[in-house]
Length: 341
Length: 292
Image (cartoon, rainbow over all chains, first blue to last red; front, side, top):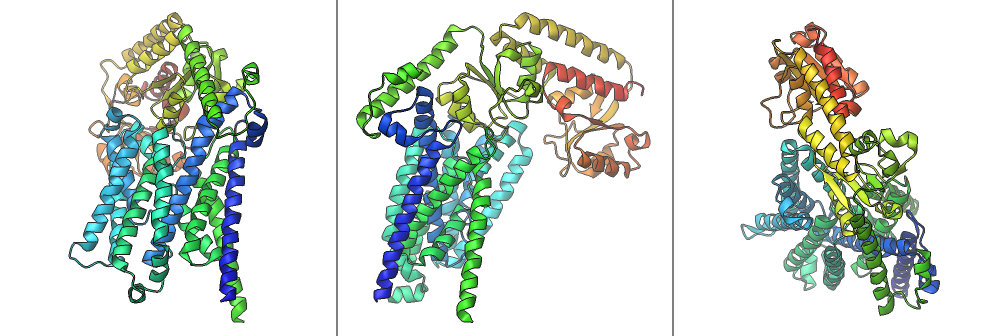
């Protein structure tokens, strides 16, 4: 009992540690770039000129908010979906949500609708595409009244493949300009200047986190298997349905605004599980912080490594996150082998 | 800029209402100063180009001294060591802010999110669509020249280039039309399609594009063999282009293979929509075919 309490205490320390890393990396986010801006000096001595202040306030701050929110959302959604599907390969994009958003955006671009709606049109159509996919997956899963988690996963994967093929079809028939726009969107980016969209993602991430955290005990029970969870008094089907809808909507919001930023929702939940274990009361906030840290650091690297040129952020999340995850995984297997000996 | 900074009172807390209001005021002053600069000048002095073709046009219009930044693909500006502000994939917005241009030239091929951000930040951004013909290329060239106060120079140059094109057209009057296959992509095979400025190279040189009936540019090797082009032009893609030539050479039934009429053309010339590169491309293609 005492050791369990120590473990919980240790895990809270991990959360504190992650929070400190996030704060430090945020300072780094403000500091590195075309001009180096020391936020501490700005706060204490107001040492900043108007161009730097412009960059800080209009470029880096919105970008940081987006990095923290999107990284956090994708990561907790990955953690929840891996939990409810009890499948380590599931991530927020597995169920076709990103494919649906990409399809919505491809249709909007290729039909020229975007030229009437302006810049706000892309995220709107992306969100419509993802919501349509969510309800299609959900409807096809429950159409005969029987809810099966495996069926939902398979339908999601199939919808994802269908969307991908339809996007390729649209791209094949598109003009050069439209083709470029679709490709740019699929690469993912944190460059968003619309304050309303940034606020939407930020508040969605907070509300989404609170909603998901309420189910952390139910998620712990579902880890034991649906039958055992029901013995413990958990309405597993309702919980899974609600969590599927919440995570899907959150992913849809992220994808429609920042495009497809891969690896975050897969790597971070696994990494956090290796560090703090499977208790969702700890792993959910830790995943949120971990996802935010990964995107913040990845964006710093993307903006500075080949400066003045910039790399797409998805390139960095894979290159940075992938090896760290493999190292942790190998370390874990090494330890478990040593324990067996 | 620094003097403005000196007027700012000491800030105790970043999140205080005061700093937020002050930030807004400074940003407003910055945006207004950018806008005012744009309004008062008829032609622009500090230009950033986000496309190699627009950079070539700026050089052609003898305005390279007004160019303060361009992409890393703008080969023509490299000897002058112009500031690099990004690639075709991503644009460094912060760098552009630091350079403080009064005009940003972009195309519809640039990342629309980046362009939207630049517009929202108060910069004057001129977006050029992909031209579909030599006439459209010339229209855009003259439009650009107006912004640089170089319209007379542009008109003079265009007149000269049109004469050159007309001279090339004369070579093909009363001659049998040859069938062209103009390949710009491999795997899938991608052809130049109608209603593009590159298709006009073929028509100026008295040819027929075998992809005339295609809506998209992708086609199969069988379609090309069946169409039996007299001339195959491949935009050179290094080793990939050489391999592609070898593949076509195996198709012995094609007229172009029988008569050894497979040619390469530099994509930095043929795929760039500027008046001068257009005429240069037409001249190169004409050299491939005029003795036929």
